[in-house]
Each structure stands twice: as C-alpha cells, then as structure tokens.
Amino acid sequence: MTTAPIAVATHGLTKRYGATTALEGLDLEIRAGAITGLLGRNGAGKSTLLQLVAGFERPTSGHVLVDGEDPFDNALTMAGTQLVREGGDTFTSEPVKDTLEWYRDLRENWDADLAASLVDAFQVDTSQKVENLSRGQTSMVGAIVGLAARAPLTIFDETYIGMDAPNRETFYEALLTDYAAHPRTIVISSHLISEVERMFEEVVILDAGRVLVAGDADDVRSRGLTLTGRAADVERLLGARDVLTRRELGPTSQVTVLTSPGDDLPARARDAGLEVDGVGLQDLFVHLTRRSGSTAKDES
Amino acid sequence: MSAAVAAPAADRAARRRALEARATQQAFFGAFLMVWAVGLWLWVIFTAVQILVTLLLARFLELGDGNVVISIGPVGAPQIFLFVMGLVTGAGLLTIHVAAGGTRRSAVRGWLLAAPAVGATFAVVSVLVTALVRWISALAGSAPAVGPFLGAAPAVAALAVLGTAAFLAGVCGNAGYRRYGAGGGTLFLPVAIAPVVLAYVALLPAGGFASDTAVGPGADVAWWGWLLTVPCLAAAAALTWLLHRRIAIGAAG
Image (tube, rainbow over all chains, first blue to last red; front, side, top):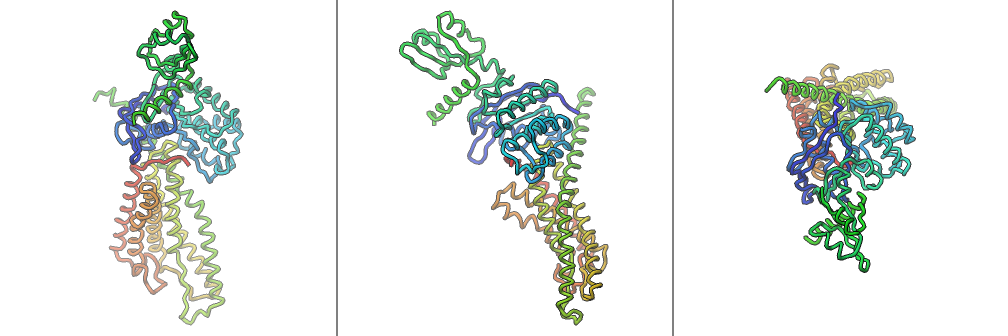
C-alpha cells in the first residue's frame, strides 16, 4: 500500500480544445506533502490542469509528471490520485451508498470509519438518490469521497460549491485533522480564497493558462505590499518595481506593489516614514489577475 | 541496471499488475451485476408477455390447420437489450471508474470479460424461458407453437455469441458518442453494430430469413459460420479498446 505523498511537475504543458487554448506552456511543480492552493479566475485553466494531473485527459503538448510518471491511463498514479470535481463523479440515479461503496471497493486506502463519521457530520442520507440531493449535499458526497479515499495525491476542484458555511467549516476541519494524521499532497482549487487560504502552504496562481505566481504561501503573501504616505516619498522608493494598483488621495499616495524575495523595500519604506501593510492573498490575487486581464486586453 | 534500481522497478510493475487486476475485477462485476439487475426485469416481462401472447393466440386463433404458426424465440429483444445495456455500461461506469482510480484499460478489460459472461448467461436463460413457454403453450393446447431451435446446445452457443457481440457493440457505440459527439457518434453506430449483424447472418439459418420457424439460432450452421463469429467478436473487442484508449473523461455530471 503506497501512502507516501506524491509530487507533481509539468513541463511546457499545453492543452487546446479546438481553437481555445486552456493551458499554454505551463511549467510548474507541486510539492509533495503540502497543501497547495490553486487559484485563478474563471477560464484560467485550473480544472484542465487538474484533469491532466489525474489522468482524465492527455496534453496537446508538453508533459505532466505525477510521481515521476505520465499519469494518463497509468494504474499506479491514478490509483494514488483522487480528483474530486465540482458536482462529484457519482452514480446520479442511484443511492449515495452505491457511490460510496464503489469508491470503497476501488480505493485501497479507503477509510470506512472516516466516511461514516463524515456522513453523520454532514447529515447526508445515504439511501437518497444522488439526483435528489441539493447542490450542497452533492458537494458533501464529493468531499466525503475525497477525504475517505485518503489518496496520496488528493485534489479538490471547487468541491464545496453550494455547501453552507457550517458545512464548509466542517469540511475544512475534517481536511486539516485528517491531513495532520495522514500527511499527503493536497491541491485545493477554489474561488473562496479568504476562507481557504489559511490552509495553504503553497500557492499557485494561474492566469490565462499560464503561471502568474507560484511558491510558498507566506512568501507569496509577503510579496504584496501596500505603501501609504507622501506621494513624492512613495514614488522615490518604488523605482522599477511592479505597481499593481495606485490610489491618489490629495498629497497622499497609496500604492500596492509586487516585490521580489529579499527585497529591502519594507525596511526602507518604514525608515522613510511610510505606512507599510501586507496584502491578503485574496487582494493580491484580485490585483494580479485584474491587472493581467487588462494587460491582455491592451495587448490584443 | 543495478539490483537496487531493478528491485523498486519490479515492485512497481507487480503493484501495477495488482491494481489493474483489482480494477478489472471491479469493472467486470460492475457491468455484469448492472446488466442483470435490469435484466431480471427484462426476463420477467419477456416471459410473461410470451406466455400471455401464446395463450391468447391459442384461444382466439384457429390453430392446428397449418396456416397459423406461433414463433416463440429469444432472438431480437434480448440482443437489443444487451446492446442498450452496453451503451449504459459505458455511459454510467467509465467516468466513475476512472474517478475512483481505475484506468480505461482495466475498465475495457472488465467489460470485455463481462460481455461473454452476460452473453452466455442470457443465452442459457433464453433457452430455459423458451422451453418454459413451449411447455405452457403445449399444456394450453396450442400445439403449433414451436420453439426457435432444434437443439439446445447450438442455440445457447449462438445466442451467447450474439449477446456478447451486442453488448460489445453497445459499449463501442457509447465510446463513439464520447469520441465523436452526437452527430459523429450516430454516424459511427453502423460501424459499431456491424459485428453483430455479421454474427447474426452467420449464425441464424438462411441469415435470419429462414421460413422454417422450427429451425433456431445455431442449428445447421456450417463450420465457416461459426468461424466467422471469431473475427466478428475480435473486431468488436478491438474497436472497443481502440476507442477507449485515448478517451477523455469529460466534465462531472
């Protein structure tokens, strides 16, 4: 039984659907044994990337390596990967228990006790047909599958759509508890960034099929800085740095800037009497992807 | 290659085989049990309708004068049912099989094994049901009611081949829809069902157009007729595998 966490790497990964390019030359590494947040706007290529990693599809060009192997129709990597997609992959016209039994029979690390406790926690009626469940309840079935499968590489792609706040909290707690007890590689793709970012150890931000930012979550967070102070002082310190947003309030200027690792800007800004604040991951994501979107429009 | 490198590679190969075997078994039982879960209803209804029709016709038609003959037979509905269940198997099981960590290869292998299993069991039940209906119709005095076969063994063999081919054609047809979309998939259907049609022509007397209704499937079939079923089944299996080999698993339902 293999339970060691699995690493993922992509090299020049490109996926096209007809004339639409979902991923363009993606180079990326997902660290084994960490929780990685995969962020991106709608159509950024998140789901496509995750389906390639899970072996659901083949790349148009380039490579994706899971545990060092091509995952497409690969018995080893597919058995070690659990992708939970939005809406789940279930027997829709059969009772929930049939779906859970199917996964139990195929997943060698399946934890029946955990599945049962999550069924209780989410109050899912397993005798109900999946098609009769609400959107949130269907998502709960996916969450149960994802956690109870205990796959070395577990991927949640917008798994908790439709879940109410208490159930989402239940899911987050269950995920963190189980992750602590059974470390594995977990990838979470989500638009609810402010809710889930506390779980991230690594972050990848995709935009238009390319990697915008990737790295340690704390490092990524620290790359965003908001400087507030006299406009002249702010401008003097900025130099050639990447300005994400700029707001003028009379003689005062507020600038959100992207820094590089090891940048001494925070210290210099404080010395200059400027107010220095961090930028939350969600704000950084919004600034980065909004600007990227407008840049793309300008270029087109 | 050093022993240190070779050992883990051998372990991985062994583990790969074990995983494939487990997933193949799951695919086999998933398909077989699903076909029979629905198939039980088919046989209950099919048997009841045959008995009812036989008795009603015996009562209201003047039988025995040689002008009216009731033909009772398992060729047609059971094979169409297995074709539809092949479509349903591919549509209902492939996505969740892959989502649960199985490969397309293990799914197809499981279904290729399930095809003769459902084909053979359907064939046996077909012959038993036909015998039952013939017996009841004889009791009811509708003596002209005749079965579709002279001997049970060739009938079972022929029906097993037809059922196997029909199920595979259904699985193949579903893969065609997945690969080529609604329009292309429909255009592909004749290719998918071609092996069934060929097997039908090979195993039914006079290609299914025999006027003697007492002669059933498999009876008086020449050796080359049986031989022809081998490439039919092989073509259905190969087509099924080729279509599934690179199939993409679409959006979750």
